Image 1 (cartoon, one colour):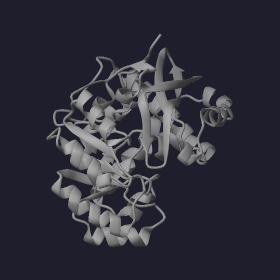
Image 2 (cartoon, one colour; image 1 turned 90 degrees about the vertical axis):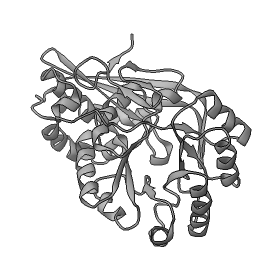
Image 3 (cartoon, helix red, strand yellow; image 1 turned 90 degrees about the horizontal axis):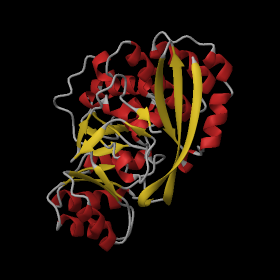
Length: 337
């Protein structure tokens, strides 16, 4: 296979703020794999929380360029198993290659990726749209300028309930909240009561991932479902989250791509947990891959292209939360000129 890497640095529409950081640009890396006249695209993101940068991602992949370029793809699962020992310390890099392999594989069969998996897309969940932390006035303004059926609200401030109260005055849309590890046990339990009254659907990662004892207390008493994010990174984490969370948020970039994500989805469902996939602010190149998992999901947060002022690719479109697939095989993503 021929390997080509494309680094990007894309501007956000608005400064993107969560409980622990703010940023104005999102560095991304797109990998392209080519074989027998077909090509596949995969994307991964830099992330300071996980100490990942685009140069580090490129170095990790380039260290195995000879192996990759001498490899003949048969199935993405076998390719992932071959690459995992080489990139087990950098699953972000493995993600880009795995998605590209699935895109290439589906194109070789001249099928959309969801068709390869024989999935029914007629009841896909809607994607939410994220409102990052800001002043209450600015968060209200962002909500008003982007009417949407489902919002994910970033929290982790001293005004969390005031924020949701203010936003609720302007819409009857579904609210989800994400505290990004900012709360403690008492705060989570107290906030959940107020948030339930304000029509919030669930709380994502209210507490630090290391506080399992505290999370157990929350799980046993909380009045809203809690969904793991920072507590659920790789496959082994799914069973570790059972009995501590009601569901998991799988991010392809963190777990190493589509191949492990499919196994994580199956395991979560076996355990009776809700399943969500999330965004690491990927562009359309990576988000188009997430779209093909929709029939397997309860919730999805794939609003990366909506939050960015620039893009890497043409692919899926998002209209009022609904995903429209590109009329192309594979994931449907093609790089913009």
